[in-house]
Length: 408
Length: 69
Image 1 (spheres, rainbow over the protein chains, first blue to last red):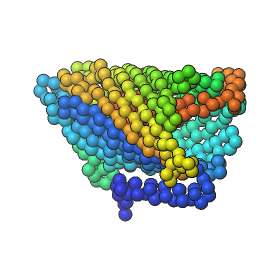
Image 2 (cartoon, one colour; image 1 turned 180 degrees about the horizontal axis):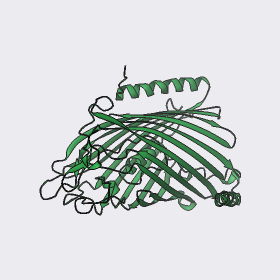
Image 3 (cartoon, one colour; image 1 turned 60 degrees about the vertical axis):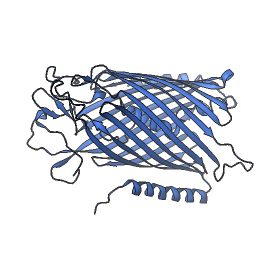
Image 4 (spheres, chains in turn brown, purple; image 1 turned 30 degrees about the vertical axis):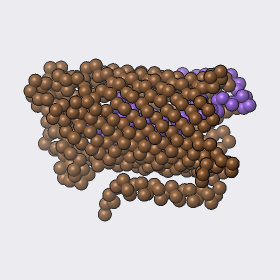
């Protein structure tokens, strides 16, 4: 018997677990936090669109400052209209007008446990993910140590993921140029004309957080990720000059990431300047830099505002071409606009309101309660990517988030 | 290997020079000064934005779907 996972079942499962955790935690007098968050993202232009709604529920409890438990559920409800065959000849086929509509629903359920000593901690977690055409299991383990009067925190982490991607079974297609795209997720992981392809992920991460002065702290982290398996989009095909074939990405990819963040407290303004930089490089020859600047200001007791600007720029993958008929790039081909040279700007803000406590030190039934709102605008620039002869029309995005946080 | 050992030793030596006493950490303890204090809303924001870029991830292994469409 196969258990089908629906949004109602997932949320009921997590709510049930949450009630168990809250009941258990109150029994052993623990500190419990719960939050529910929903994010809405939308970009559109011409006939192309992409929208995602991401709800989540998180519950965590700490018992006697030693053991922590975490449970969570989140989902991606994604829909839109996209080009199924990228780089169709511009003069003959209007790929954008003939965009195909699609939608998908992904569930993630996560659980974790942590053990904390006086200066060290160890956390492990497991996440189960499922959508109609994708399944995943991932494990992480993270160790931390605080040194030098807790001014230094060193962190080491390792993650392992085991994913499966649905694809069209095509045993007679011996060459990548003969492969057809997956028309829909119908029958995935069940039907004979579908196959399941493995994707393996390993991540290594190290971090160093340092308090340098009473008003200045930095965080440096480096990570490497090794991915092996099917990494293309099975639904997308690329026009190769005489025919279209399912996009074909290399099976191996190694990513290297370096992050540096800094926080400076400006006492005359009672606010914090937040700086961030990220450098990324991978074996597909994608190189990117990200720069971020933010200012977080407490306006009055319980109300804080954060304004944020972010710039992102990347090079294209070595096998990217905007016309594989005239400029092929060897055995690989892609229709992914995110593997082309691109940049983006983000401008946004965040407001957090911690509701004031009453005379009994509580906020209604809660020990604390906060409301968080986020709004971002994104502007993309795809320098070389075209749908036929047309530039990417959906190059602006809007993101809005509402979050409620409670402490028991 | 000796280079890595030198790097770790260098970090520890540099970190040991820092002398912020516990009673001086009033501002460092503010949420706006704490790394990773953004909560679930920040995690979702990063998740959505990074899914529209080619250099997403690298820091975790959670199942991300195929980024289809």
